[in-house]
Length: 469
Image (cartoon, rainbow, N blue to C red; front, side):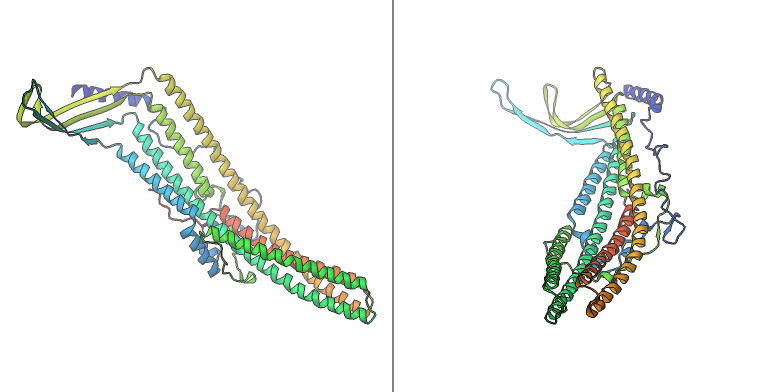
């Protein structure tokens, strides 16, 4: 027992000496992490893009995506998506590892019963037995178990952050796929309506040919344009089917038709507060995951440092036996033993140094990845903000273009009836109108995508109350 106390005193003295080596220190975020200016100059003075501590990403996804059908699809995805289910299982595995690391501080007990029969010089066999309970306990003076526990907790929190990242990605991807279907539906409706109009136009040109007001070339040209529009319809239907199949797979379902509303009925928020760049450190699950990876690497470095110092283990056993030395004793007697051991590394110092260098290198890599994750997050927010501004400006101009082309089609049709305009001018105006109408739908869709991208870039869709135990 005196030796055990001596080991403990020596260990505490050495622990005080080596405390400057950070073995016992907790992880702290590096002071040189760059977060200022991540959003560039996209925050304007308008109501659309406001810069304060409130963040658009903090809104629950139900308040951003208000279409009831889309909400049902998102709920299905959050319940059944295979990637999210896998991420949840990874959290469970990390939780088990963390529990194991916590239990390492407690003594280990083992029951090791033994027995046998022995005979000497053909004498009657004698039964001997022992039933000891062994225990061992490592005294964590140099922080190996402490840093292992902290490392396991960082890995647990990282797995939870990864689950949150998968969750936000699923919400954004389902919303994107849903709005893609609505866009394709609207484009298909416009194209089919245009195809019917052009079929009637072909009949009109044929009648005008009979009346001597058009020639065969005009008829052929009108037919060719009608077939061109009709040929684009199957392509749009194929795109719709493929998008439905892709969305079904995301929902962990067999390919099937996806219920949906109307494109023009969709309403998304029109004011987007982006908060301040430093909020990305807490709100972006991928950024949090990168920082927790850095924390885990920090504790791994501490574990590598602790390998240079001795391990102190106290062990003992207690039990019952009927064997005492060379004599057989009946009834049995109590068996007690206690010991302490100190293992100091001597000849593996070179290996420990190499392991420490490797751990430090991994920590530096994690620090670089953390900073890069922050820069990537800032880039995504900046791009999404600017995309919102540009798409809204494009939509204003596109609406004016469509209105002008509608007047142009009416005017050229009237002029052609009066004989002061050719059918080629009518075809050109109609083709331009169709392209503008399809582009208008695409522009509206891109505006929706920009909102989704901003919501995702700000960490939207995550569970606000996260489990970080």
